[in-house]
Structures are given as C-alpha cells and as structure tokens.
Image 1 (tube, protein in one colour):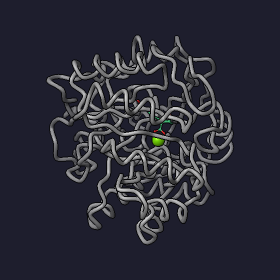
Image 2 (cartoon, rainbow, N blue to C red):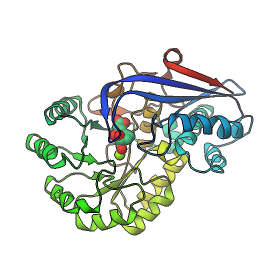
Image 3 (cartoon, rainbow, N blue to C red):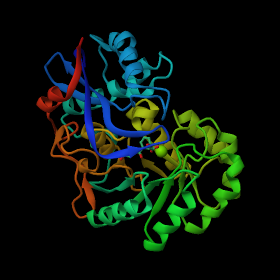
Length: 366
Ligand SMILES: O=C(O)CCC(=O)C1=CC=C[C@@H](O)[C@@H]1C(=O)O
Ligand SMILES: [Mg+2]
C-alpha cells in the first residue's frame, strides 16, 4: 500500500452528558479524524483520541497535530508498506506520542483490511460476531448516578464503571450497592489516591467490585504492587500501560490483576494485539477501554474486542452515550444487550464525511 494523500479533520462535538474528570468538566470533545487515500483511491479512517488538555496522558490535540504534521505524515507518505505492523514499527522511530501514531496506524488497518476484502475484526483475528459491553457513569450526585445506572441496565449494559474520587467513594458506592447489590460494578479513580489512602481503599473490598481502575499515578508500579497485596479487589491498570513492556513490568511486580487496552494509549492496534496475546498467555484478564471517542475509534474497538481473549465487557457503549449524532452509520448500538461486530470490509460501517466536514474546525491535507 502506498499512501498518496493524508487528510486530518480537527472536529469538535458537544457531549450529550458532560463528562466530569479530575481535570474538570468536559462539555465538548475535540478529536482528530485521519483519512488515508492510497494510489487506487481506497480510503482508510482512523482517529486520534487525545484530549484537548494533558490530564489523562501527556498528549493533547495540539501536540498530536504537531507530531502528525512534522514527523509522522512525512514519514509514511508515498512509502510502500505491506502490513500495518510495518507502519507501527516505522512510526516507533519517534519517541512517545502513541495517540498520534494510533490515528495513522488505525487508518492503515482499515485500509489494509479493505484491500484484503475482509473485515477489520477478521484482519485482527477476531472470533466473536457480537460482544457484551459496559458503560461509564460520569461523576455526579449519587441520585443522578443511580438513575443513569437504572437506564443503562434497561438498555442492556452488563458492566457498570463509575467515576469516583477519594472524597466520595464510600458514600457513592454504598448507595449504588444498596440499590444494585449484584450488578457488575467497577470504579475508575484516575490516579486520585496514594498509598496514604490504603486503609480507605481496603474498606472498598466489602463492595465486591469487579476491579479498581488506576488508583495511583501512572508510574507507580511499586505502590500498586504494595496495594494489590493488601486488598482483595483486583487492580486494573489503564494510564500506566503505554506498551507491552509496561504490562510485563506490571505482571512481574504483581502490580495489578487486570489490564485495560486502549489502542490510542498504546500506539495502535498492532501493540494492542501484542498486549492481548501476552495477557492471554499469562492468564491476566484484559478488556478494551474507551476514550469518549467518535464511532470510528469505537467501531475499531468493537473489532478488537471480538478477539477471544477479551473476557470482560469493555467501555464500548453506544454512540448515543456521548453523541446526539455520531459521524458513522449505522451508529454503534446495543441489540439484546450486545453490540454486533461489523462483518463488512474494513471498519464495516460508512463514515459520514459530510458531517465530519460540517464539524471541522480545521482541515489539513498532505
Ligand atoms: O469512552 C467511554 O465511554 C468512557 C471512557 C472513560 O471512562 C475514560 C476515558 C478517558 C479518561 C477517563 O475519563 C476514563 C478512563 O480513565 O478510562
Ligand atoms: Mg481509566
């Protein structure tokens, strides 16, 4: 495959439900849509899922635009690759910036599977035709969170992730457990705790949570290992995992019992597959995380989650969880509590290029 043209669309959409994080309240979400066109006119779509501010990881929309324009795109333009893994390897001559890289590499995977006349799921080695999915409940008043869980239960979600802080964890979780004693419930702390909070974290064992996601800082492997020995609830690492190497370190230190894979955070689908295979070989449960992304990245995650080793429902909620209208059709939706894995070539959906153009704040063509 020889890429003749790369286009970047910086888009911004209003979120249906504002998303409260440790950084602040997100009411709108910027992302970058990547469109690759090869010599035959076949196109591949990807998405850069970095946020506008460096609160989740160090990347932002602006750092990604810089790295894409000044380094990544000049490196892949008019160069022949026979497989997306070669693209990942080539882009790794540059340090860091996994989300910028994943935007390009993911678009290559879409293009590659189209050229092979197979679905992305099949190209990745996927087996499932439909997947169970989880949903994230934003940080809010406990009553609002209870209402959201009730609604999402009716919609068919099988796993519920709530965002908590160390100021409100016990109060919120106990109210949820009082009303929903048996649901599959997990929390995401986004590094809000430290080892000084170990007694407070021990108290959460009584709630029989599926896991605690990223209680400590992203480089705190040793502290997570100390905590995991003290609590029964499995620790899941998210922000700590930028590569397979980080997973090997976490596994060697017993810093966690579960891993969440986000292709953007690890540099793309090639690295995601390596991490999936390692976790399966080492009996470490693994699931696919979300990034409050558009349907392009979401449907890419659906394809990834179709691999047999993903055994925990991921953050792969319907388009309607975040958007009034998605930029793909058909939109991601639950049918009988499951999301169907597209079996059309490539992503297997249609990208609404008209809507992308209407949502674009800036367009770049190379
Ligand atoms: O994509 C979704 O629906 C949820 C995504 C989600 O929970 C997160 C995305 C990015 C940062 C955090 O807010 C959180 C996470 O840490 O997993
Ligand atoms: Mg997380």
